[in-house]
Length: 136
Image 1 (cartoon, one colour):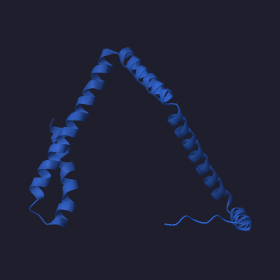
Image 2 (cartoon, helix red, strand yellow):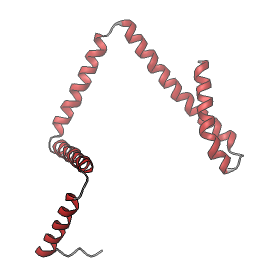
Image 3 (cartoon, rainbow, N blue to C red):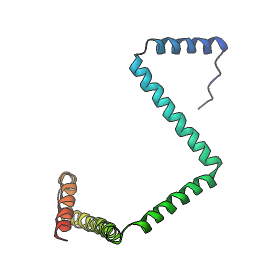
Image 4 (cartoon, rainbow, N blue to C red):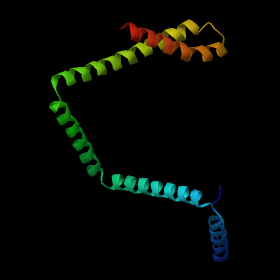
């Protein structure tokens, strides 16, 4: 694709004038939304640029966050720790059961038509996984 030709000064002025005219007719609420979106985008771009230029700052922030999490875990009561670990184990067990259920559903439904497979696989996987999870 050939490069675009540069606009002349008159073309740039005309383009800017049309954009200003369009913005002047804009609803105040829509203008507020547009400006808020521009601010968010600019904030994101500044943060990304800062991260690219100072990767050690980003790593330091990650280290600080992990240190705080470690301190929080050490400061919690033993019963809270046991509860947190049990919930974490249950979450991993549920994920494991879900993978097994998906495999079994896929095998069981492989003889069905393609349309039925698409319609029933997701529902079957969730039902089987929830059933296994509730029994455990």
